[in-house]
Image (cartoon, rainbow, N blue to C red; front, side):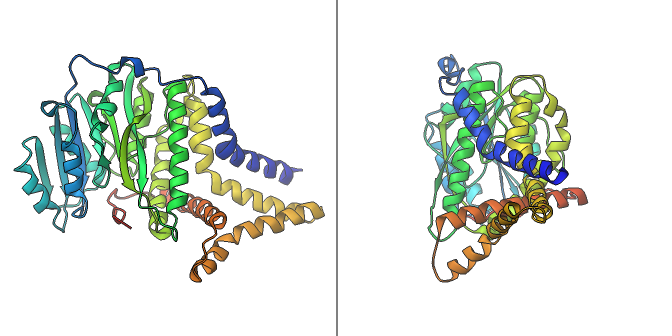
Amino acid sequence: MAPLIILWISILAIFHSYVLFPLILQLLGRCRRLQSKPDFATPEPPMVSILLSAYNEEEVIEEKIRSIYLTTYPSDRFEVLIGSDASTDRTVEIVDQLTKEFSSLHFFPSDQRRGKPNVINSLVEKALGEILILTDANVIFESDTLSHLIAPFANPKIGLVDTRMINLGMKREGISHQEKAYISREVNIKHLESILWGAMMGPFGGCFAIRTRLFEPVPPTYLVDDFYLNMKVLESGYLAINNPDACVYEDVSNELSIEFRRKIRIATGNFQNLVRFRRLLVSSRAGIAFSFWSHKVLRWLGPFFLFAVGFSLVWLSFTSTSYLILLIGFLALMAVPLADLLLKKVNLHVSFFRFITHFLAMNLALLLGFIRFLKGVKTNVWQPTKRHQ
């Protein structure tokens, strides 16, 4: 009896996080709109500080900076602060040259690697803005990105605003289509969480805005600073929302091995944040606990549910032919990544197989991230994802 209960609880947990929860949000959000939208216009645009930590970003840093300065946002109402995290390429040279062209661009190079969160923490101390925008070097702005990102802060209850990422660089042979599908789905879920409860579960880390007075320095060994800041905003009683009108562009990941390493780091940071914000799992504020469990925690526990399904089916296969057939199907599913790899070697790309490979790889990354979390994190310095994969 126990294996049967474990089997169906595990299946339902996975089904709820990936299928049922998004459907519930769609049904609840059908007739809802972002509540702050009518009040976007402000008499005087707030002062904004755009913060960027750069490590060996010579391929993208100039395009990024110029995209910021093409903005329609008033030029006297924002500043750009860039910290070089001991870059060894031409990043320092390029940014130094651009400071001569843009007077509100301030550059703070460092000879010692500190990690993105620590660089951002130090830049916040120098920032003059009422609103902080934290962004990555490879995330390119539209001319109205700043205006749309800042506008919702006209609502004093809003503490954090996220952008909508538009993916570029799609390729047939890698995982870019699977990553795009995953990211698009995440954007939709976060937008629905925003319009229903103002309780978005984490921004797109490449570009989001937060009130300066709500910013709290990220602990020195934390790996996922964007989710940490998002949950601090919710913990403080403010709203965290996504504004789909604030668009940015980024090349989507294409190499599974590179994305796999990134997902391990993110998973490790997720478990750090789960422990830190565990009280929000029982929050009485509308939507927070439900979204935290449904959108994040059940998904982070996905590899354990998959193991539970497998072990339960092994046990039950001795009691019924039906469960033996299910076990064979489960094992076949687990073998799909191998089949996908073999097909890829002969230049055959089966989209369905690639989606299963992506799903299982991300769950393996969650498991390895959990193991790394248990071992303890000594530093938050990491190698950024390769640009223009």
